[in-house]
View 1 (cartoon, rainbow, N blue to C red):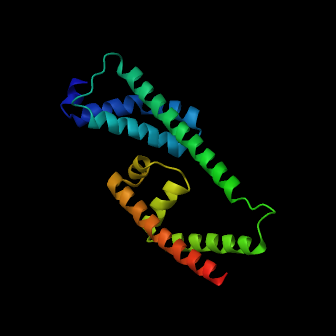
View 2 (cartoon, rainbow, N blue to C red):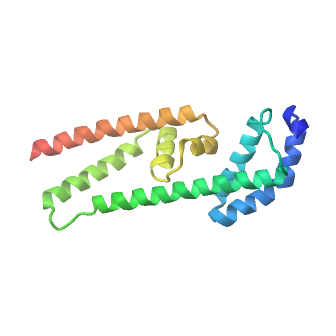
Length: 180
C-alpha cells in the first residue's frame, strides 16, 4: 500500500493481478452480465488508483476491494431496477387504450417514428451516448468509463441529443395539431 501511495505502477499492477479474478467473479455472480461485471471491477480499480494518496485502509486490502465491488454491484442492481420501473411506467402510459381515437393512434405512431428517425440522424457518437443513457439506462459515469471519455463530454452529448429531439418533437406536434 505504501508503494501504491507513492504512485508505483508496478505495485498497482500487482494488486490488480492478485485480486482481479476474485473481484470479477464476485461481481459476475451477482450481476450475471460480463460487461457490467467488468465495468464494476474497472471502477473499483480506477477509484483505488485515483484515491491512492488519500485512501485509508485499516483492514485487509482484499476485504476492502471485495466490499467496494459489492457496493458497486448493489448500486448497479438498483440502477437496473430503477430503469425497469421507468420502462414499465412508460409502457403503461404509452399503451393505447380503446378510448383513443384512430387519429390519436395515428398521431402517436407518427410521432414515435419521427423520434426514432431523428435519433438515428444524430452524429454517431452522440447517438451512441444517447442510446446508452436512455435505452440501456447507464449512468453518465458508466458511459464515460465504457467509452473512455469524460463525464462532461457525456453530459454535453446527451444535452445535444435531447435538444435535437425536443426540436423535432415540437415541430411534429405543431404540424399534427395544425392538421386537426
